[in-house]
Image 1: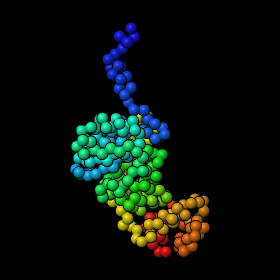
Image 2: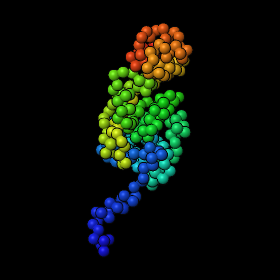
Image 3: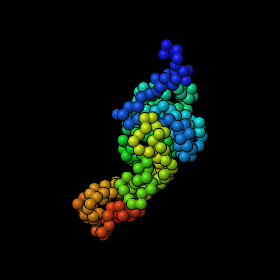
Length: 269
């Protein structure tokens, strides 16, 4: 009797809900559900037809579809085997035509060297490994030319809008130009995260700011400089063995130095 009284729309919703993938907390999954936001992310990437795009964690494929619609060739890496299987069914034609290459696995084990030079990264990345993914991509021998990433709003602000330096912001700005594109409310995801998100882009990625061992020394310096926030920068650097650099920074704190000043310290011994 109850089944006979059930509205058709309710039955459709129940079937749709039954077919939806369940987010796994262990993988930090929050599925983007708004098609228009996916399209805005793809637009923010400024893709040209034929560009190769690495997508990390395509999930339900909503962003994948927007990237393909702009003529990109997408290389998608999905850690969730069940989601990957669903994507293979949903994008069977695109895979057959070579427009989408889908790999099941952890992005941290993916061979970036297999991608063509000048590739871009466009992705809704797992927030709990944001820093790790940024380091992986920016320090890779085969760096992307640009990245457009959906990250926590606070992280995007720390990288692109903070008035004072931070270890994270300096690490990104040393390789490219970060920009806060737009805010994405938590209600755009299923399940919704605890905080709002934002789209962060990094353009012009390269090692042009580094020469010789300067890259290695730069990161050793900034890690030492931010090691103990309550101590003066000179003391942090001296304790880490950078006596000459310690003598050049006066009474400044680590967050007071600009990127150019940190690069000068790395280049001058």
